[in-house]
Length: 375
Image 1 (cartoon, helix red, strand yellow):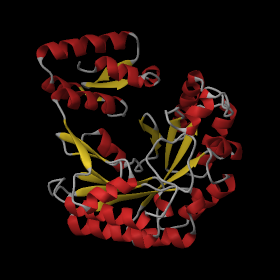
Image 2 (cartoon, one colour; image 1 turned 135 degrees about the vertical axis):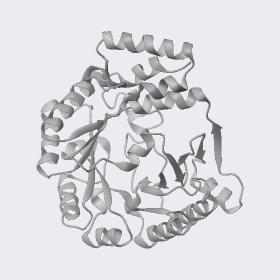
Image 3 (cartoon, one colour; image 1 turned 45 degrees about the horizontal axis):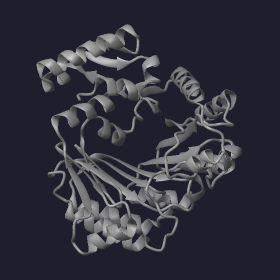
């Protein structure tokens, strides 16, 4: 099995925290879509005829793009790749873009899952983040989706920023639970360089983020959602039974995937490549049949470290037998010593030859992974 990711690099406005590649001008959308379709044809052998079990339209904001353009990309995929019968087919959307007819059209062209960028049910938070929608629009969008034929729904929520106290964060979570959302992604706000948020904080216009707030609100989310029958299957992701994101799991379990569009990344099991992060330059290279990506041959060290980083974040954990088979004697000895140290600190636990983060360990996931990396 393999996955395809389609990056639609357009947004109606820039969220203050976002460092993904996008443009707020739609003037080049037809040109970019045509380039994406040409890239799909060019890369039709990248996944070596493996069956595609997930397709994910992300961005940017795919819900900004008309149904006809989306359908033309889907037709190109269906023509050039072998699609699995039980395909998970996701489109990212913003609440302000949704209407009944658009959702019906998405279903008609194959989408069976929507990931909705709600972020919060409080209007003051939307202003802080510079989002286009308000609470009323978010609720309306969810209700439209729940009445539609698309039954798989994720909403994104953001926490860990000034102005969102623990009580307000708790209310956001309970609001989502009350609306019977089957999948909830909870992301702690981070400050990325070159974003408006970074400059606002640097200039003193916005308060600095407090890591203790993020940690406390992570634990609140974990406690509340688990109590309400959500499985915490990855550090940022919670799902009711049967609603895990297959596409995200592809990223975490070494499954091959092809990313198309400006800035998109791909992985074929041995190499990783990433496309030009500029709409015009991407289109020019595609149109002129010149190389539009950079490529990296992954070493054994790269592959093991990526496995440790991604697996440790999930409820499946690190497979000790796999790691042992991929490391030499000295490497595994060093790994084992570090695991025992982390066990004594109660940051990890081991069960049935699998290593899992404890709740305390989840708060330090990235640094723990770094300690386990081959160097």
